Length: 111
Image 1 (spheres, rainbow, N blue to C red):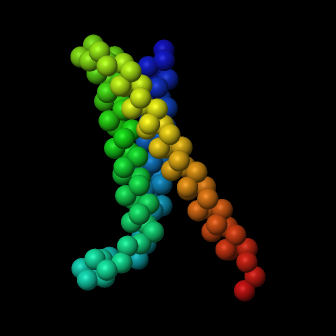
Image 2: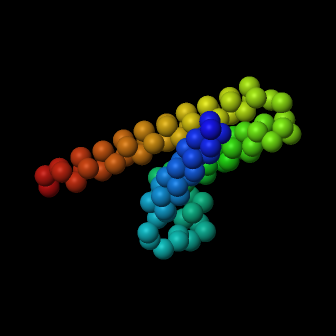
Image 3: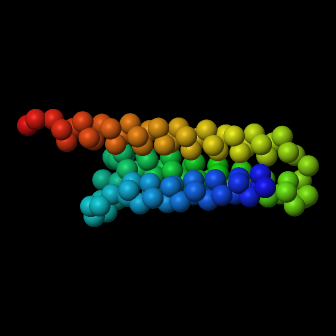
């Protein structure tokens, strides 16, 4: 039962990551090679963070699957990876909430 709940939570997190990745992609055309090397956008930083958190979640899921199937006895390591992935996802969600709040504040500013 706990394994199914853990998989459901990871599936929900993966769905949220896909949604946030879609939002982080820049809507404008791709910059030239010189511009891409000289500037780093906020969208690129968020996309990098999303990919990192997603990779952590996938690694934790794989580790838990190995423990569940009996291929590994490292339950403590699997639980640690799962907690790290959960904390990373929570942190990313809080960053997203702060960014949305800041954008809302900017929109409400009088011009």
